[in-house]
Image 1 (cartoon, rainbow, N blue to C red):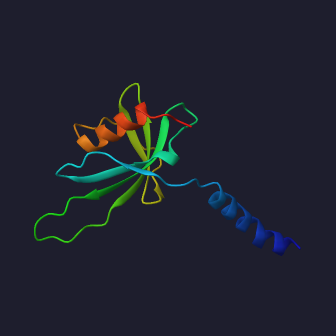
Image 2: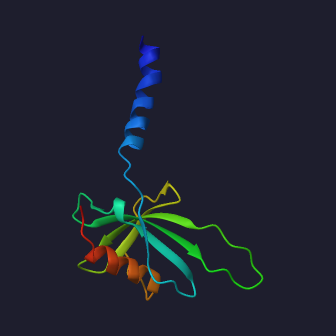
Image 3: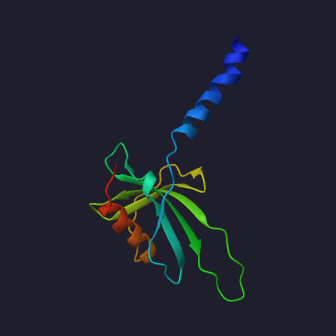
Length: 122
């Protein structure tokens, strides 16, 4: 009996995580020479500290003579009051102790921060 519980309990947690995932609705910010970036409207919510959390994806621009590089998927937290962000997960890998930082003039990150900070959070 214990073996059966050990086998089936983790499956239940996996299904619960999948079932709670909402629809994905990507919103693109204006592209730059660095590439394209989107954020997912359906993932936007407040974290336990009162900051915004959002899923975003980035595709680097294709340079002449180069192949398209793979994009990256980020779980991004945004402090709207200070205009800071931190990527707490990159391509599904958790970044422990991710530090808050400014965009340093990155127009794509600035656009995501502006969009999510003015979006309606449901």
